[in-house]
Length: 217
Image (cartoon, rainbow, N blue to C red; front, side, top):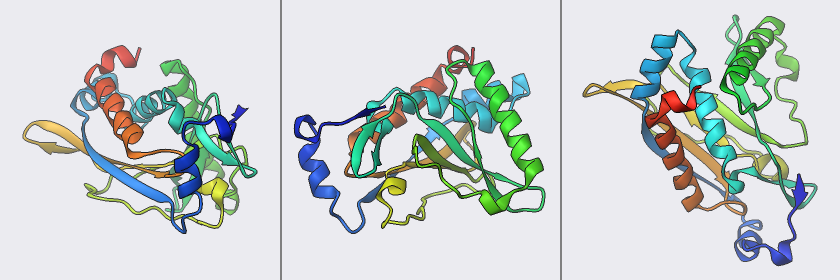
């Protein structure tokens, strides 16, 4: 992690503009073609959620803009961002599960599946939303029960540090004319990131999905 020198930062003017907004959060969504991943996960008998999570984490970590956070009133750049995602307990209560990002697919997959099982077994909803102040996470929600069209994430806008963490949301993969399509939304703090890097992120994710056998190796 390193501190960003605002006086030398290319985003100084946009940052100083948007940091004072009452609501500096913006959201963009797109429709991804997940056919290749859907088929690969089915053939491998692996979790589609975990496989897609790996694609997303690899893609977003490759972009500096997505590794920026506000910490103690300063802008910092993390080396690596980890996933913090929602899982459902057996009793139907949502719990937060956090995993360590790994470049190696097999290691990442094993860790996430183990973390999910341990979180479900603990069922500890009392501490589910205690957020580490490191902020080197993405907040992630998957809602596979419906084909989403848009998302509006909750924010405590008085908490600039927490609000600087991007929210990632995707819905149900559905068949459209023989192709599996899925909506994904990225919600981010405009003081740290603009629309172009978000669109670039969507394109990187889609390119990875198109060449999924190379990614999941």
